Image (cartoon, rainbow, N blue to C red):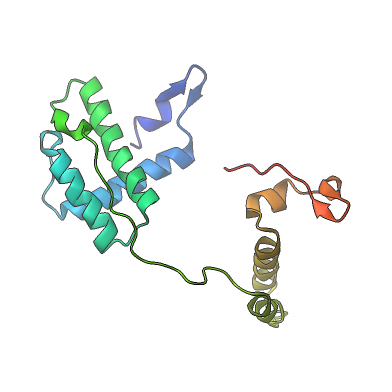
Length: 171
């Protein structure tokens, strides 16, 4: 990943970004945990193995369904690249892998106004960094905006008739 990814073209004028490389590196690290020092070959990566990987991500790592699907997709990406480089792979990796629905339910996955006020009223005057982080958290909680949007893209022109109008951008 470190040697090939920075030069890998994803379009005519663009190579893989450092963020994308980081995602693939994370996938490699998690797959290595799954291997548990047994070094799985490309010829061994099958639908059954990917199902086992899915259960590992769900049961052991406690990843959400979307994260599990993303990790499996990244393993398949490496199998495709290996195939392109004439490395023997088990074609069964291409089969669809089903990911179990999440069984954990959240009754209240948010903070109410009283809890937000409690965080807001914590005295952090002794630490400017914590004070700023707390303020950014409060802004994010009340607006629902990503931190990257309100720190870098939000300005006075976005305030219209008491509302914030902004097109968010996922990084």
